[in-house]
Image (cartoon, rainbow, N blue to C red):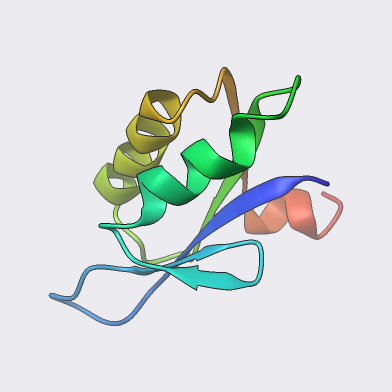
Length: 85
């Protein structure tokens, strides 16, 4: 099963919300959740999908957290890719 971390825009001045697939997580619990998911997997690949208005710094932070949790490869999903473009 593909793991997708989604950053959800909650408006200016607020940290984006986070989901791992359909499961809500917080910035504090993200690394532990990813560690649990990937510790038994041979393929340590995750995808990151950010809403249009989410600052790239937050996306980069999620990528760093993923690497700290043992993820080897990170892919980015953009609206264009999702639409099949």
